[in-house]
Image 1: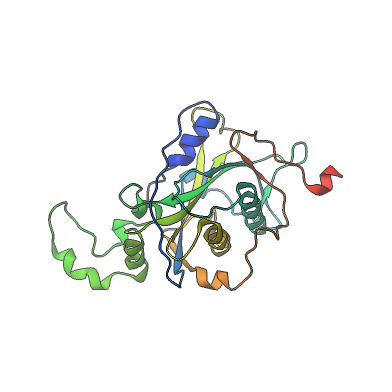
Image 2: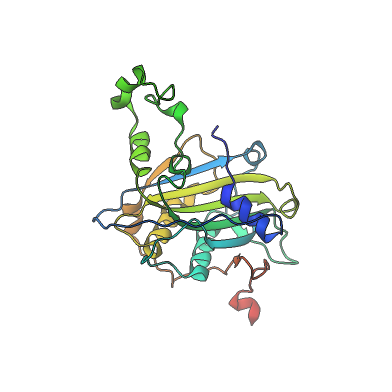
Length: 271
């Protein structure tokens, strides 16, 4: 199993709880061809996380959400999604998969889900890790540093997934990270991490505002479900449907960092 790196999620969770400092943002550039390509979804889980039973609509898992917003970097001139609208969209996607926002006095949360997104740059960010590259699954992975061995002759036998990861890792990508912590331990100095889902897509031909909702629609069914390797999904199929941040059904389940962590009431509760 690949090592799970909570990375920015843990650093910013620590910041929110008074335990640490945030990472720096990054910058880059975007270009615009006609097709979007495939999105890679990787979910790494700890032994504790693998013991969890995946939720269903009939047997949901309740969570409390913290949104860190665009913490993975940005690029000048990009069009970014409104934070609260994207938070609601994520809640919508999660609810369809059995993850429901807990309500004080109604449902006790089992998880703290920490959400963040942004623009990642090769050479600055570890895009191989983000996209789920595992040298043990690469038949042509270099065996020794600064030494080219027999593996160099096996590059034509690589899987399409490996080829695409290595290609995408050379260019900027949009990324979304959802990290699940055990709720009870989240405010301690040693929070228990259950799983982390990373969603990555090349930035070319897109804006952040248009790309992130499509990435979430494509990745929805595999979010929070441990995988032995990255799952490659077609975003162009997801784009055939209507992805509109204005057509949301669920409450804002993710509170923005710095504005508290009590979920806002739904319109029905306000009445």
